[in-house]
Length: 580
Image (cartoon, rainbow, N blue to C red; front, side, top):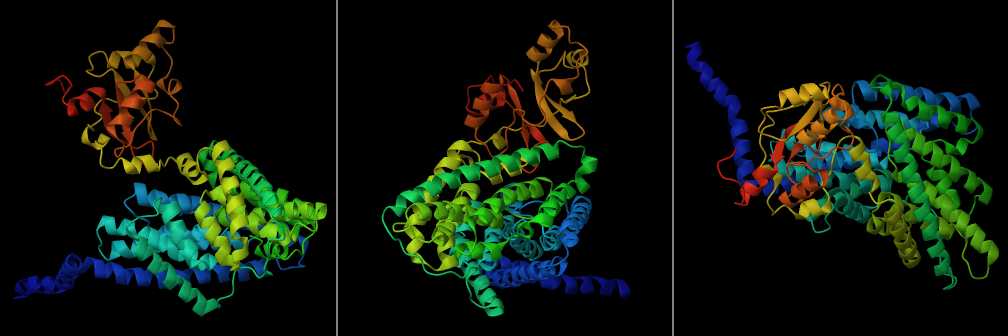
């Protein structure tokens, strides 16, 4: 009797699951719409909590006028403690959050774990509250996108729909973090998705508006910065704004190159040092904070002072230099935090400096330095983050001052042009690449309809170990049907060697040379499954190989298979038939 009851009991438990699955099939779009509203409201509330936690705990840990030892020890203790938690429990919660969000969108099927969301929220809150001068907006993007991903996965949405929720959560986070709903939409489409005409536009707008409404309900509708209304005093000022654009572009390049170079150095240290590397950032910030307290934290209060013309030019020069060094060291060493806030801070200081100099030279034709500090914020943001449209709209929404639009557009355009010329790859793309994540370019996304590597991929059945010598590799490949082979170590694939390169090494008397010495594990020829045959052929030609490893976008060392010249040609019907 009991055995007969078990199927009915199991069926009772499974009935709601079947009903939900049926509802998703029939009304997936309606469910997605409701979920968009819920995500907007939920993310808005979480970001408000994020803001309050970082500000109030920071005020308690290193209060204004407090003892100098607090300003030295609190950043060090905070960075060391969070460094351990990040390396031990939340490895995906390091850094800004924007590259990680894009990696989840393009390389991980939209999957972000709940542990990563919690780790990002907690570790970033503690890091920023301890005075580390990084931003909260980038981490908020990952938290918002992560919450959207977790909800989508728990509700059983298709992977395509889960991926579509990531920009929805990202837009909701930016709308609440900056109180800029329109700029949030542009950022989600321009930076996260990379397509202003993406199909998720409607959902992104809805989530942004909902999150902004929650922010307004909980914290009011005051703009992020209070400042007077500025006017263009003379057309001559447009030349000064163009000069500010040049300075902003050069600052952006200096910041980007310094941060990326320092981060690459930190990544070369042994892995066992990762957990205490953030202490380097905390130490630098603590020493600076001992002498100059304004260095601690994001510093939006001091940005407000620059916007209102209340800061001396010498202090702005000092803060610009110290903040540049503090932010790059803190981020490169592995602390959790973003570069949104710091870019606005440095831009405001730079703009204030240019404004003071110009106003001093021609007070009758140049506006108050505060106007230049305002434009400088957008100028640095456009040069560093490479989102010029978002920058213009964001500054307008932050200040609600339409008079700065034209100067802002001029300065942003010049800054964007200079930074993109002197630093070809955007900062988020390089940060992801340093982590072994290869995000698809705009060209790759446009090639979706072409023949792709995945159509010709085959299993990598012949692999050489990196510890092998040249002599051993030649012996092993003597009867191989291939002429190029992947080289692997404990990380995965680290390079490719060809029969000709092995023969050349043998002829030069390097028979005992290890294969690991013949490859560059950080930059080896490879392709991804979603890239085109054209790209694969071009890369084979450059590398002089007849086969390439196919690796994951989420981990460049994860070998998914190989693609050979023969297989590519065979797919076009011009290869030798019957030779596999």
